[in-house]
Image 1 (tube, rainbow, N blue to C red):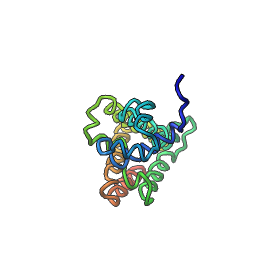
Image 2: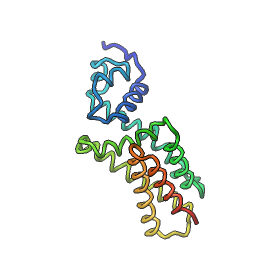
Image 3: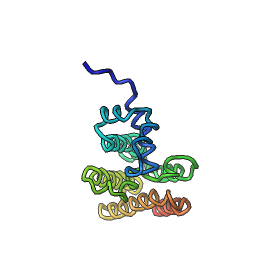
Image 4: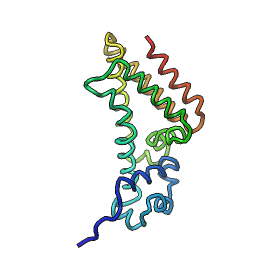
Length: 192
């Protein structure tokens, strides 16, 4: 009979997520992941199969704990007329606040998109899925904010706004002022 797991898996994944978010998959060393999670290498391999398995768990955690809660009001059956404005205002506040992972590191998935790990199909599918989920959610927000907008115009604006989110989150690591200006542009586009 195997030993009972003596650690909190979700906490270990969050700790690893912070390392991957800051350092990237390739630069995150196993000793660094061991220190961050408090797990031995054998525990990491036993629980997650590999460093890559731990990264996949970190990506899932990132989507479920960081991305989707921010998108949830846009996907609500009771979506408000200002849900999309609130989304951009909240994202801007997160990027502007010093010391937050978003303000320092941008987006875990977009950082991975520019690294060799993005060539692996599961990672590229996760990145593409995130972009599609973002665009769909923003489209719902646009529909609530501007109910008279036709499908074509709504899709076009959702594409532009999702591109601005991606640009802002990419810029967050290197040019905070430009990242914030990019989100300000999105907010301007939403003014009636």
